Image (tube, rainbow, N blue to C red; front, side, top):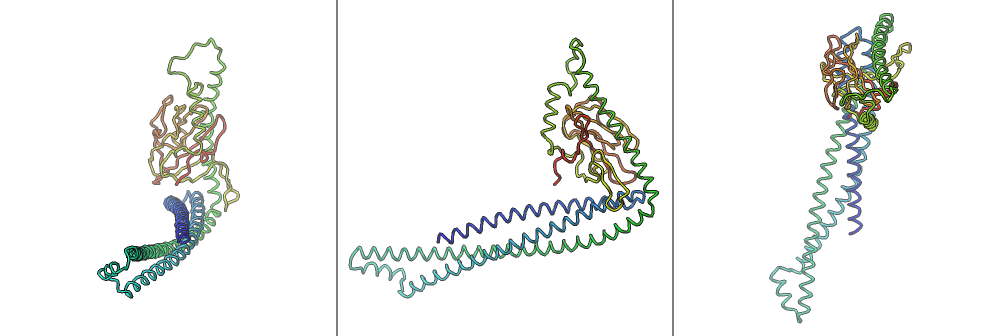
Amino acid sequence: MKGWISLCLLMVVTTGAEAQTVQKLRDRREALLREIRQTGQALEEKRTHERQALESLLLLERQLELRQEAVRQIRRDRDALVHIIQQLEKEATVAGEGRDKALQAYRRLARYRLYHRLSSKETLLYFLAAPQLGIGLQRALVYDRMAMRRREAARRYRDEQDRLLRIKEEKVTAREEQDRLLSEEKHQESRISLERTERSNLIRSLQKQMRTLEADLSRQEKERARLEDAIASAVRKEIEAEEARKKKPATTPKAKPGKADPATTPAGEAIAGDFRRNKGKLPWPVEKALLVRPFGEQRHPDLPQVRINNTGIDLRTTADAPVKAVFEGTVSGVQYVPGFAYTVILRHGSYYTVYSNMESVTVKKGDTVKAGSQVGKAARSGQATYSDVHFEVWNGKNRQDPAHWLMPQR
């Protein structure tokens, strides 16, 4: 009996752990499929603009990577479900055996009662007919135990029967999920085949139009260089001004209350410390964003002669989306850069965050903002219905990879 109970407890614990694993796999799969849908929407918009063919190719590459990862995730989910179904089949076997044993015990006790014709009246006469009171009490105790064992056998039968039905329902649900995953896997593989064909056609088209492409890239790089120079100049000026303030002699009149520079005060140092401790936990500057260009220099996978350098990250979001501060700080600069519209620079002690490509801003230099406060509105990309926001993180004069500072997307 103890062994049977231990086995049941082990199966329950194992099934619970497996269920948690499957849930994690399912969450990861759903996150991948959501990102595929977002990339697909951006890709459809890009396909309508011939002069943005290179970015379409980059998005298509990303879409293929996501689909391939989704297929791998779906296969892992299916493998986990196979294991779950095997565990459920073992549980069903154990539950079936327990049910059969309980039923046999109940029938054996019922036959014994019928054999001796122990109706309630006959049982009472049988007890009263005992030669001694002690024997009568022993008979009563025996039949009471038999009745209790019969009820226990009936209860065990019902419990095991209910458990068996529940396991069968879970198996049906798991097999339905298995079939759905198989259908989703086939759909993703079909889309992968189509998108690979589209990628090949797009690459051939781009190779034919390489001169135009190089001219477009040159123009884009010049615009980006202007943005980088403007941002770097603004940040360096702030740092140089701070260093100059530190070098002032002690006889210099004190600043008026409330006018001290945030970067040089204990409060500013505390903000910098808080900012540093929140690495990997900062909210995204725009909601429902898709990372379309990561940080640093990347060689294009299909066009080796094309290299793209990014001093921050580019986040695709809906048109006119609000752009929000990722951390509390002070506005150290607001500029307009051709090709990237408005740029806002926030200072967080010795750290800086930069928000570019905004069609309008809601702050001015010297303002204090809180985390989550709106600093501007994302600018449209031509006639498209999406916006690309450029975001940077600086530590002093050094650029950081913003992806390492933002919380992971779910």
